[in-house]
Image (cartoon, rainbow, N blue to C red; front, top):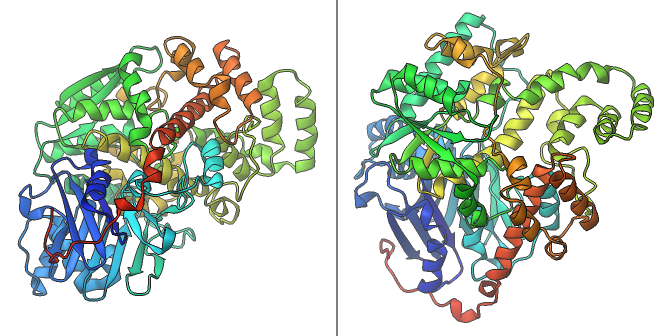
Length: 628
C-alpha cells in the first residue's frame, strides 16, 4: 500500500516534494522520485513485502519504470510462470512481477492479477504510459489532462497542488444526493478517476489518452451455477480459504478486524485455521444500541484470538472530525469513516496489515435494505394509477413520515424506489438543478433481466461498494499507514457469488445463507442470533448533545451561505428538526458539515492555486535509473 504520482509537467524538486509529502501517510517508509524523458514519477512506500530498499519505487525493470500502490496476492504463481519463460528477478516483491508480466502479456497482464492495485508503467522505448486499476476499485487512481499535460496520483490533492482547477457542479450535486462522488467524476472538473476494472494508455508523443475496460460483472447471468447447494458450499469454502491464505502473506505483522458479525467472523475463523496467534480488533461505543464489542469478544474467545477492544467516544472522534478533509480530500459523507479511522489508528499500533469482511453484504445479500425492498415489491405490482390514488390519500396526513410513504408509493417502480432510498426521498434541502443523470449505473436497474435481488446486488457492487465502502476503507486505513485487505472481495468470490441462485444466498428470512452455513460449521449459530448492526457512529445523539455547539457553529447562517447547491432556509429547518428531536436528520447534517469543512479547507490552501510559474522549471538531465 502506497501513494503514487506522475506528471508531464516540469515541476521543480520543491513542488514535487510537496506533492509527495501531501500524502506521506500513505507510505511513510520511503519517498522517491524519478525524472526521465519528459516525465517525473513519484512514490511513497509502505513496505509490506520484501522490506529491503531494493524494492523501493519508482522501480525500473529493463526499459520499464513503475509506480505501484496495492498488492498482487498471487504474484508468486505469476512469477513462477514467468521464470519458466526465461524472466529473471532481483527482488522478492510483486512490483517487479507486474513489469515482467506487462512485457510478456501486454495490456492483458491485468487479467492475471488477483489483488487490489493502481499502477502506472512508463515504457521509455515506446514513450507511453500504461496504467491499471483493480476490478472492484479498492485502490484509487486519479488523473488530469488539463492544459494539454497528463498528471496522475493516488489522491486529487496531489494534482491540485500548484494548479488552478474549478469545482464540478455535477459532482457537488451527486455528493449532496449520494454522500460520495461516483466515478469517473471527481470534485474537480479537470480531474477524473480511472474507473474500476479499467486500464489506460497515454502517449507522450502525441498526447493521446484512452481507457479500456478489462473486467465487469456478468449482467447477462449466462454463467449461472448449475450444481446443487452442497457443491456450491464446498466450492465457496475452498475459495474463501484460498482468498484468506493469499492475503495473509506479508513480511510485517498482520491482524483481522472483527466486528462480531457474519463476514468478519468468517474471515477471522478462516485465518485461525491457517495460522495460530491471530490478532483481532474491534470498536466499543458507550452509547446503547451502537456497541457490538461484546459480540466480537465472544467470537474472539471461541476462536482463541489475541483480541483488542478499542473504545470510541466523541472526544476521541473530534480530532478526526476536524481533520477529516485532510484524508478524504474529496467531500465524502459516510459517517462510519470516523470509527473506521479510529479502528485503523489503534490497530496500527499492533500490526501493519489487517483483514476485513467488506464485500459480503453486497454479494451475498446481507443488507437490511434488501429485506425491506423485497417485502415491499408486492406494492409495485399494482398499476401506478392505483398507487397514485393511494399516495394522494396518505399525503393528506400532517405527519412527515406519512408524506414520505406517499412519495415512495407513487414512484414509478421498485427499482427507482431503491435508488431514491440512497439519494433521499426528500431532497428539498438541495437547491441545485440536476446537471445530468440521477446517478451512475442506473441502467443496471432498469435494463436487467435478472431477478430484483440480483439486480440491486449488481448495482450496489458497482456503486456503493466501489465508491463508498472502498473509498472509506482506503482513506481510513491509509490515514494511519495501515493496509486493509478484503478476502470476500477476491474477484473469484465475487464472480462465483454472482453466479449462484438467489435462494443459495437469500432463502425465506435467511440472508447470506451460504456464508452463514459455512461459518456455522466452525462457530455456534447462537453467537449470531441477533439483528444485523451496521458499523455506525452515534452521531444522532452526539449532534444533539456533545457536538451540538460544534454543529451550530459550523452550520450557522453565514457558513450555510458559503455552501453551494443547498436551500439555506430548508437546511436550517432540517438542523432545527434534529436538535429538537422532531426527526433524525444526522445524515443530512453530516453531509453539510463535511462539505462546509472541505470548502473551508480549500479556501485556506487557495494560495497554492496562485503559485507563479516559478514553481515549475526544467527537468534535470538525469539518467533513467536515478532517484531522489
